[in-house]
Length: 248
Ligand code: NAP
Image 1 (tube, rainbow, N blue to C red):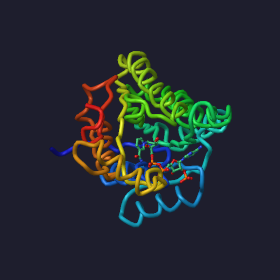
Image 2: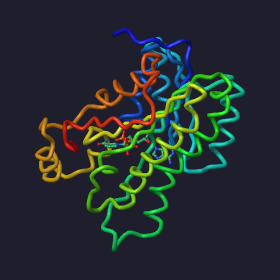
Image 3: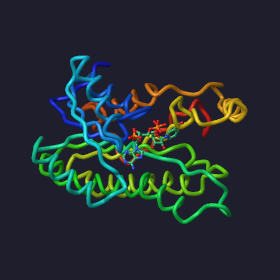
Image 4: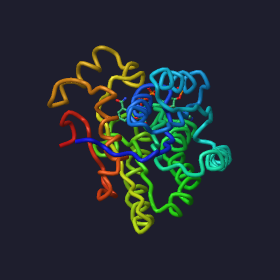
């Protein structure tokens, strides 16, 4: 199937590395101008430069997505510059894993604000012009941990499950304006985040996956690119699990 993108502009958070970078590259390959967002200017800058070196359109923005005021200001500047942001991919995320009884308030708040509150800040900042244009796509990256839970990830599991409720509620609010809101829940994907796992834990994790391997970032970005396309216009409020069969 050939996907259609009509001079779209996208914001992809966490585009400096891993899944987010692959999402940025996937959208840019379809002719979308991608604003690559990350905390470190070097990582989002390198992602945007790589896209441009391949003939695509991109720019970069270094910002802490957990800072609501900074995100609101950035959204105003982006709308001023591009008139409209058509596609928002909320992908930035962190882990601060430890058992509940050892988890500090800081571990809890850092993960909730980076993985969940950030989705609210960006949507709030970018939805208004989408409603005026009567076209928009919001895609929130959750996790199978939001569906299944995981010992040592009470903070992360709560944030990722929160994304499901946010996605459905937001989808109902903006559907009449032709804006779709969906979530993608990856399983274990080969990135820096899973690179932190010991060989023993990684091997144990693979045994839990019916397809017996970790996924590749492109296997998530392919789903995101489809959901961002014109062709996915009748899909909203859904979660798509891309996990090798783990959470079936
Ligand atoms: P990753 O390789 O660790 O990359 C995370 C990206 O998010 C980086 O670009 C990082 O910026 C950015 N980021 C983190 N905190 C930020 C903040 N406060 N402000 C701005 N940017 C921030 O992660 P990944 O594995 O690609 O994961 C991407 C998303 O998929 C996350 O939401 C994660 O929870 C989810 N996910 C991943 C897996 C997996 O197996 N990998 C599974 C399920 C869900 P810098 O480059 O500046 O550090």
